[in-house]
Image (cartoon, rainbow, N blue to C red; front, side, top):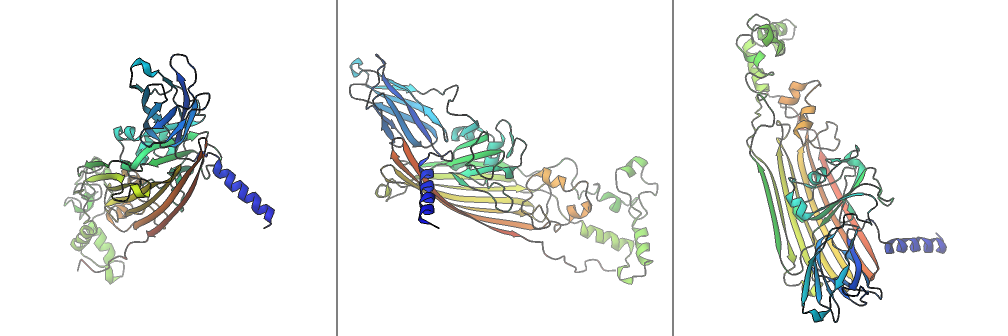
Length: 493
C-alpha cells in the first residue's frame, strides 16, 4: 500500500472519530443564559451538571453546550458573579439527543440566595427527525416487564422485538454502543439485568446509514456506571406459583385423549367400536382395535421375538407413557444490582466506580420435554474512571448462560421458551404421541457467552469530543442429540 493511500485511510479514520456519531450512548445539554430583567446575555456564566461536575461557560452571546452527558434525569447549577445561583431540577437527557435549557438569572441584590426551578419537557423535540422512543429507568420500574424484550415490546407499534413486521434478526441491538447479537442467526442477545439499565432507546425508522446489518429498528441500551459518592442497590424478584400452563386435563390423565382408549376396561381389550362407547364418545378419542387384536396380529406375523399377550402389551404401553406432567416448581425471575465507588482506591484512580448486576430466570415448560424448564443467568460488571480532565474510560464484562431444550432437531440455534411455541410443535404434525411422551424427541441445548468491552471518551473542546470502542463477544454452543434410547427390556412375556 502506498504512503498516500495510508495517509487517506488514517485521515478518514480520525475524521470519523471526531464526528459526533449517532451511535454515541450519551446526550448533550445546551441553551442560553440571560439576565431575567433585561434579557441581555450573561457571558461566562457557569452551567454545571450537579451529579457529575461536567460543565461549560456561556460564550459572549450567552450560549453554552455540555457534551457527553449520561442519559437520565439530571440537575443543573447555574452561577455568575452578581447573580443569584439557580438550580434547574429534572432535566431529561436522552441518548443522542439535545436537552435545551434556557436560564434567566436574577440579580443578587433581590435577596435570593438560590432559586430552584423545575425543568419542563418540550412538547416538540426539534433535534429528533426520526421515529424514536426513550424509556428511562424510572419508567422501566413502573412497567410489568421482567426483561429488556418485554420493555421494548410494550412500546407502541412493537411486538416483542418485531418492528414493523420484521423479525428480531433484522434489528440492531446495542448495549453501551456495543452490538450484541448471535452470529449464527443474527438474533439479538438481550440477556441484560434490568437493575443495571439506565435508559432504553428504540428507533423504528429514519436511522442513519452507520447502523449496519439492520432493516427495521435499532435498540440502544445504556447501563448504569455507579455513583461516585454513594452506594445504591436494586433488587427485583418476581415469582409465579407452580401451576399447569394449559386448560383441561394433563396428557397422562386416565381420561385424556392419549390414554383412555388403551386403559378403559370397557374398550381397551376389545376395541373402541365394540359398542360399549356411544358414537359421541368414540368421536372424541382415537380409534383402537383393542389389545387382543394387536396381540393376535403380532402372533400371526411370523416373528416370535415380538409375541406378547394383551396384558403384557398394555403394561408396555403404561411404561412408555409413564411420564409425569405435573408442574411442581414456580417460575421466577431474580434481578439484583449494586454499585458505587470502589472502596479504598476510588479517589486515586479518577473516582473509580462500579456497577455489578446479576439476573437469573427459570420458566417451566408447558410440558416436560428433554428438560422441564428454560434457565438463563447473566452476571455483569462495569467499571468507570475519569482518567483525566475531559477523559472517561469504561470497561465492562458480561457472562451469560442459557440452558433448556433445543427447538431444532438438526442442531440449529434456539430454545423452546413459550407455551405457544411448544404447542405449535405438537399440532398438525406426525408422531405427536412421541413428541409428548418421549423426553428425547428434542435434544438438550446449552449456550455460554462471554463479552468484554471498553469505551474511551475524550472531550477535546466544549464543542468536540470523540469515542473509541472495543468489543469482543464469544459464544460456545452445545446443541447435541439426547442419549441413545435405553433398550433394556421392562416387560417380560
